[in-house]
Every structure is written in structure tokens, then in C-alpha cells.
Length: 214
Image 1 (cartoon, helix red, strand yellow):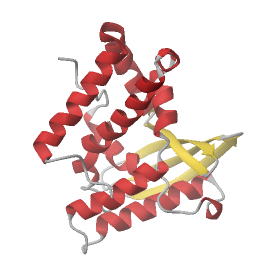
Image 2 (image 1 turned 60 degrees about the horizontal axis):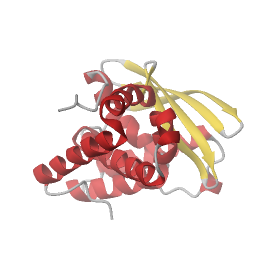
Image 3 (image 1 turned 90 degrees about the vertical axis):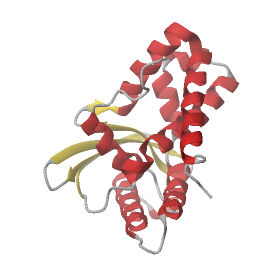
Image 4 (image 1 turned 135 degrees about the vertical axis):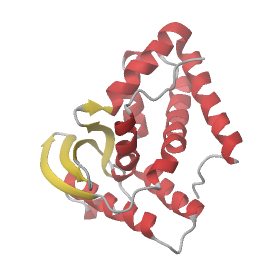
């Protein structure tokens, strides 16, 4: 059995539960979002409204949240960055499967933690844009602490999409890259895909399916 595919510390896992969602774009028309900061700000507002909506049950909230995530997070760019040189040597089908499995794995892993957030405050600090890449620095304000978070975004045809999140200097992409690289080295790309698929199937068995996305 491979190590748990989640190398973040306990605190980082909890913080990332919120980050994973606010980094996505929401149902916002690209032309209405002029800057990367406005993209992130709009997403945070959309997600928190969903989580606080008492007229939605647990599955309905996740369905709404999942639609935001799937529509706005650049899982392909994230996957390419995580696999690094292994992306170049992977087959077209292996790439497709990894993007699909990794997206499902993240959504399943962080569902419970995501739903726990209600009252965090976010301050927007700095924004830098270089070509089709942007960095947005923020601080998440909780009752107990202040957590610096940096979003890395890429400009696609439809607007800005997040592909990495850095929490207190720790990159999500770099963490998973190290873990996945070790698995690929010992078991190959097929071994990594099998491991991810197994974790997804276990989640389905325990919860009656993946988090629903309509």
C-alpha cells in the first residue's frame, strides 16, 4: 500500500479545504472579470453564499460547489505541473485519466472540510501579472490566526483559472509532485493511476458515490 496521497500537514489540509474552492471561478462571465484578483474575490463570494444557504441540503450545496470547481479550476495545467517530466512521457490516455482521477480525488478528499467553513475573512494584498500568468496574494483571517495564501492563475481563452495554491509558502503542486513522483518511480504511471482509482472507489463504497455534480 502506498502512503496516503496527501503530503500536506494537518493545518494545511484544513486551510486548503477552503482554498480549493475559492480558487475556482464560479459562474462568472469572463468579460466581467477584468483582473485575477477580481476573479478570486468573486469566487470567494459565490462559494460562501452556497455554503451559507440554509435552503440547500448537504448534497445540493456540494452539487453547486462542484459545478463551480469543475467550471473554473484548470486541472489540466495543475496536472501537468504536478507530473512535471512524467507528463511528457505519459501517453495521451494516461494524461486524460490522471486529470480525471486527480480532480475526483481532490473533490472527494476535501468535501467534509469544505462544508465546515462559514465565517472566514479574506484580505487581498498584492497582484502581479506577467503575460498569461498571474499571482494573487491574500490573507485568510480566522479567529485564531492569519494565514497567507497565494493563488497562481493562468489566462485561458475564457479568463483566469487557478492552477496552484501556496499556503504559508507551501505549494500544493510541489507537495503532490514529490509524492506522485515517488510512486511513479517505484510503480510506474500505471501504478499511480491504479492507486488513485482505488482511493476513488473506496470513497464511493463508503459514501454511496462521488460528491454529486449536476
